Image (tube, rainbow, N blue to C red; front, side, top):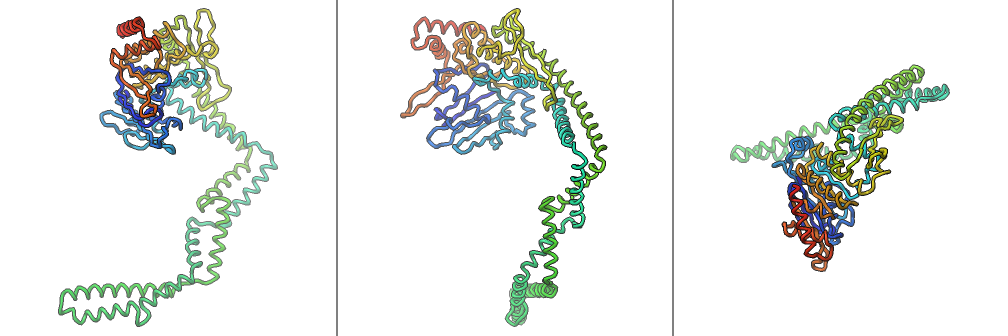
Amino acid sequence: MLQNLHVKNLALIDECEVEFDEGLNILSGETGAGKSIIIGSINLALGEKVPKEMLRDNGQSAFVELIFSVENEDTIKKLRELDVEMDDNTVILSRRITASRAVGRVNGEAVSVSRMKEIASYLIDIHGQHEHQSLLSKKKHLDILDEYAKKPLENKKQTMAALYKEYKSIKEEFENAGMDAEQRNRELSFLTYEVDEIEQAGLVIGEDEELEEQFKRFSNGKKIMESVNAAYQMTGMNDASASELIGSAARELTQVMSYDKDVEKLQSQIAEIDSLLSDFNHEISGYISNAEFDDETFYKTQKRLDEINHLKSKYGSSIEEILAAMDEKQKRIEVLNDYDAYLKTLNEKLNAKKQELSDISEEVSKIRKREAKKLTKAIKEALVDLNFLDVAFEMEFEKLPDFTANGIDLPEFVISTNPGEALKPLGKIASGGELSRIMLGIKAVMAENDHIESLIFDEIDSGISGRTAQMVSEKMNELGRNHQIICITHLPQIAAMADAHFLIEKSVENKSTVSRIYKLSEEQSISELARMLGGVEITDTVMQSAKEMKKLAAQKK
């Protein structure tokens, strides 16, 4: 569950910290008080894009931190598979945001946005204000079904996606394979010329590196010899050389070393230096004697390098790549020389892969249809709890005209809200308020099917009132028995069910507008319910209604 939210320097919030409870956490307040900022802050910590308007204008960095306590063993296992190191099963997601960048961390370790989102997906699920509109998209229906049927589908969907990739590749090759005899002869002639060009070069792997080193040496031959000869002059060729001077020094110390052990040590050291310098002079003399910087060798080296670099410019950046390109061209020549056999083999491969893909797609489709019956039955039961009393809710399947990486199914939820009415797509029947309730019903079913411990609902009460609002509040309370629910609401019926009630309000402090969030006591919660019921003027009657509403809600728990 989400234990703690800490927000600093974001929008109207200078700094706030919230300790959430188990069960149903309600957030309420006047319109514009900053309720959406709280949800926005949580979204930022979960890796969502940072809107520029969310940052305060004082130039400081913003900071959001979420602390989760994870209890579900399956969730702990999945997080460990993602290499999330946990102490006491605690996960801390944080994000520091400046005008130019945002840095996310999980338990102190910097992570990418995609990784943060993946980790967060096992911890919390957020239902935004307009998410119910996504139910108007058939793709969303397929996503919901596949998420519900995740376990029986997972391996088969991976196999299907891999087969589709292979099928698509073979299909593209087959579609691009058609050419007449003239085209084949023209390509064959060109490929033969390219292969001959590479073969005649007689390339040897590593040859280019040796030639480049040799060319570098030849190009700087005069400078090299001047420097080597100068070094030889200084170390060993004349009376004033380092070798002669060190030899003289060694002889001087030899004459007196028997008188002092310390001088004997010094003589030993200089004798070793004299020996090393003698070896060096021998090596440098040999280098000078053996050096060959003739023009003919230099010309041949340069010409060979030009030939290799010309081939690199056409076939690859290294000799290995050039030879690999030649192999590919030779294979293509073999194909073109027996093109009919190639087309026949390709067609056989395409048909075989198509059959494999068709088989796995049908298997996936059968699983989806089986699981869709379970899903829609569970959603229908949830909808009845949400005041869809005579509802029929099913999923219809349309077969796509061709394969996709996701199969051949285009499923769609259909609904009838009145007896005798035909089942129709959601967009043709459901109003905004009904879509909100349908999405709540789906979320309720999905929450029981997965292991996400925390659910956030941002104004799920859109477009509902009266008895329907009461039934929605009871469904939220039911969800709160097995999950942590954090809900922003304008409806007193839902707020009355709170296990923990928080008030968000806006005020002016030091000539600056800020939002604050407070946890309400029982008495304060009743006062907030009275405000939600009565508006500006809170009469005794309104206050009594709020107390009665709170009492009835307690009896429902």
